[in-house]
Length: 234
Length: 234
DNA sequence: CGATTGCTTGATACCTCTCAACCCAGGTGG
DNA sequence: CCACCTGGGTTGAGAGGTATCAAGCAATCG
Image (cartoon, rainbow over the protein chains, first blue to last red):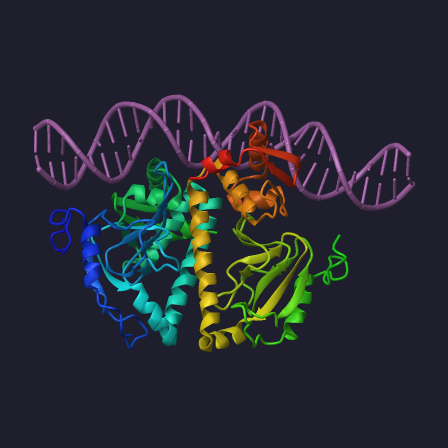
């Protein structure tokens, strides 16, 4: 399943450790791309489905950009309850911290590849490079905005509204406007929306019964009545 | 009640408008203080209890720093449901946006005074002043962190855990380590925690019955067993 | 194949919401 | 001074939405 990945679940029992090994070989990020983007001078890493990329409390030496696949960042309570803060797709940055340690964990939702950048080098660079510092600032502001929108959803929306919002969010990233294929499990969706897997499943079934969506398979969703979904969203 | 404030609820029927008038007279923020803080060259504004400072969707020409009192920033759903994102106390920045318009509303929880800064001037300045841009970056990162912690609370904590977390958060800002006096109403607390006023009230009563807190009055809370509160928090 | 995993569905429990009454303090006006 | 009103807070009864527990199903894998 993950044979095309440098770090597969079989070859490297602990990709997190493997990655840590790779960190030492990482070049300092020293250039800034022509397009206003971080140039790809960081190390490319691959993670198999469900592997940890870093853990809450680990030293935040690196930050990442998604190349392919999906990454989730999340927090845990001591009894195991989990809240997924965000799903990150190709092009998204994650793991940039203002403090010493990571405040969230990051895990591979699907097999994925990311680029790792050394934080130190970038911070030095950002002090001189206005465009780069602007990009990092935009990252922080976007993160704040997303988390705030997410709070409104978690604090004040019903299960039906939450699922509708989630589907619309996925639709924005989808190539096909009429359908989406989910990279994440029901558990991931539940932990993103502050629900249980059963409630997510029941809500999707209800949307199907109501003719709003079709479910050709568990991970594929076709939109039959997008307007109904949007009406559920604010 | 608000006689010591320049903008009281009686003298100025619409302080938001009064503030808007003041905006035009605002000096551009042009200096940077010696302490690594924004110098107080912005206009000082006062708002009476429950007055709007700005609304979601307004043009975000200004951002603010709290001098005294408490400010809430929040979002609304179309049917009036409200989610309070944060309470801001003396020293806190709020209302700095990366985009054109405010993404949240800001309202005075208590009578309060704030300093308003022009965003444009600061952005220009930040490009040259590394310490200032670092401060704004820290603001964005703190906002992101706070919103993420808040998401875990909203998505995965019980009413009891939410209220406990809220009390501990208030305690951190309190001068007296053994008690707090709340600036906000039960409705504010409820909208911050994603609950109803009744549940907040009941939960506080329960904590009182259990000997964890005492409630000399509705807005004053004494801690009788802080450890029990902390045990409820992760 | 049998085992496993992810998902769905059903029955029931429980937590929080809703609706309502009530209390209390503070302000107002006769 | 007291009756009245108002707004914020508390409490109770009942409803409802979501969680929990459990069973079953389909696809995948060894």
